[in-house]
Image (tube, rainbow, N blue to C red; front, side, top):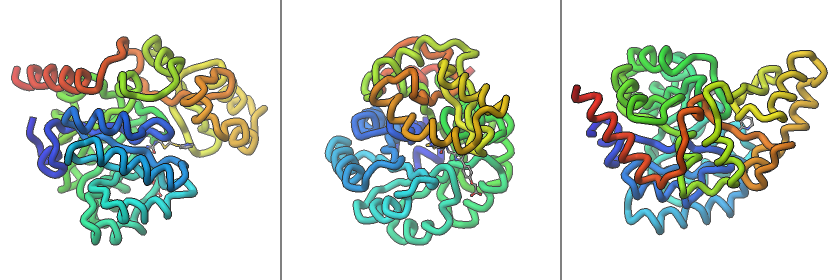
Length: 309
Ligand code: TUI
């Protein structure tokens, strides 16, 4: 499937793997890039030396294919990482959880393709004016830190408002989601949750099992009281957080304290008592762990047959 995104990024399939904090490392990124998509390494809050090593490892295993780095702008290491991607000649950068405007000039000067993730038309327009090459329009169905608008409503409005290509994200895990995204005006998709259940994804087995066993109603949004809403698997821990936020027994400060380090506890330890297992609302549709190549090829074979109908 050739679109403006396959052309822009030099990839076979117009699919970007989500830059999932604590999750998206070189094994997953390199499997996605080698399968013809765009693999991403997540900046998260990891130490710079670790990220440099992850970038070099990915570069060494993708046989010249493109890959990228996601920079989470709320992270304390965002400035350092913004410099690191230039030093290490990373070809593509995506950003999340903020406005990357102040880094844009240095990235463009270095020849980096920049794709901010945005939750609204206003921010999308600002990113286009600042020189973004494309945007990811991310609906509230996504896992992790989310905006309010749905993929179905956001993508066509962003596509109408911009001249640069739009990538749809949020609730996409099979070929129907890709075909629908194209119909909404997107030139590609970003997929996170489906890759949680990839063989190459290095998360704790308990995390993968939660995703594979999830039903349609098994995601929940925590953090609304703090202004940083985050979609998770509906574990007892997540339910307790939400009820504490709702009845006022958990102040925003207490919430921040309890959730500090909870992503790491989920990803590395599979800790059901204290871990935040971020996942999208589409998890209920995912029932099997498979290699990235099979996931991508099956998604696009289904999308192409639907679009050819
Ligand atoms: O960034 C994400 N998803 C994430 S980041 C993350 S790590 C985290 N940990 C604890 C609390 C919060 C996050 C887990 N998942 N997706 C991209 C995304 N970006 N969604 C929403 C936004 C966004 C929000 C506001 C982008 C820009 C923005 O700009 C506000 C402004 O104008 O500065």
